[in-house]
Image 1 (cartoon, one colour):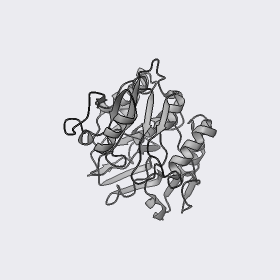
Image 2 (cartoon, helix red, strand yellow):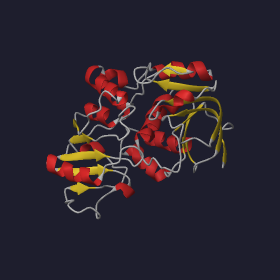
Image 3 (cartoon, rainbow, N blue to C red):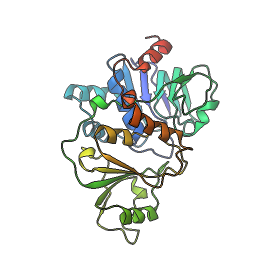
Length: 306
C-alpha cells in the first residue's frame, strides 16, 4: 500500500513503527499523544497509526488518561489517520516515537526529514542517511551520525490525576518485549498480598489454561479508564532483553505517588535505559516533564524550518 501524506497540510506526522508483531496499546501510543498535545500549540501536527487500532479504541485511550476538551477531541479525530501497515509512505516530515528500525525493514519512508526517538535495539546506530535524525539520551546510547542528545519526556500536565486508590497490584506485560511467563504469575501470588490487575495481550493471558491461578487475578480489556485509581502498587517485572529504553509506568507512578517494586531485576548495570530513568525519577524528576521551553521545539524548528 502506498500512502501519500506529503499533500496533507501538516508540518509533522507522529507515529511509531509497524510490523506483523502488533504493539497494541503501549507506551509508544501515549508518547504520540503526549507530543501531539504539546506540539499542536506550535505547529500543524498529524498522527499516523498503522497497526491494529481504530478510532474508538484510540479515543478511549485518550479520554481515559488525559485532560482533553471536547473541541480538542474533535480536532484530534480530524488529525489522526488509521492505515493498516503501508509499505511506502510519502510525508513532509515524520517522527517515530520508537526506534523500530527492524520493524520498518522492507518499508519505504520518503520524507524531507525523518526523526526517531532511540528505543529498544540499537540498530538505529547503523542508519547513515543524511535526512534521518536520531534523538537519543547520550547517557544511554553511543554517538552516531545525526545523533541529537534528547531525553524523551512525559506530558504530565495533561494526565488525569486519580481521585481515589484501590488496594491492588498492577502488572504490565507485552508480547513483543515484556512477556510474563506462567510461572511468574504463580510466584507473584506467593510473594505479594492483595489482588492483581494484569495488562497484557489476550494471547499472553494464562487465565483458563494455568492450574493454580486464583480469583486474585484480573485481566481487563484495554484501555482501562482511570487506570491509576485502580491500583496502589506497580510490580515492575524483568525485560528478557535486559533493556528498557525509557520506562514510562515507573515515572507515572512517581507522579501519582504509587508504590513501585522491582521484581527480580538483577541487571541494573546492563540496562542503562532503566537505570537512568530511575535515576532521573529519584534525583531530577522535573527533567522528564514535557513543558514549555522543551528542546524538541528548537530541534524541530531548526531541521524542518519552522
